[in-house]
Length: 235
Image (cartoon, rainbow, N blue to C red; front, side, top):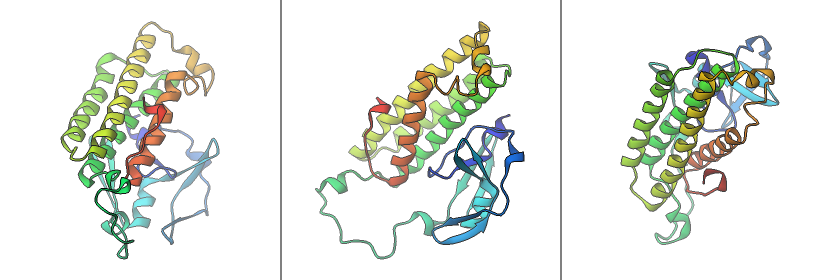
């Protein structure tokens, strides 16, 4: 189940581990994925009007590499795809607002790692609840501890004011996921999760879930941009 939760990567975010799915039969053949002008072939499926791509195919197209660590899949992109272009605009004065908004490379790396861990935690738990799998406190605690550890690493990587502000948003999202996870574990214990199986959107439409999703999308965009931004969904 955890492997299923980590197999797909959403095209609309820089690095998102998405919920598991058993909809492989809906793969659409013959679609061409273009990344920075490079075309390649990868299995692409449409779910709810959104496009998802197989991470192994994505790694081949981008000449990246996949690494596996327990129940986690990490995609590393070549430096040429994540480094600034050779011909950059004129340098921005050091005290300008644009310069101040930049995130350090170390924090971006740690922040993306923490975001991926939280996304895996939430998406795997959501999949388990919606499909009636057994969920226990110790099972959820493994994800919570890993996310807490990655959050500490992100804190250690903070070196600028922008990093510090962005870290606070990551910490806020961690707290939302932790509270959401605790609530679902308790509901599962009291046999109050059947309502989520009756409708495919019941859990997603839950207000706490909506807050988690909205902030998650914003964090993915911010970390991908390399500049600090703020959004009410993460407060």
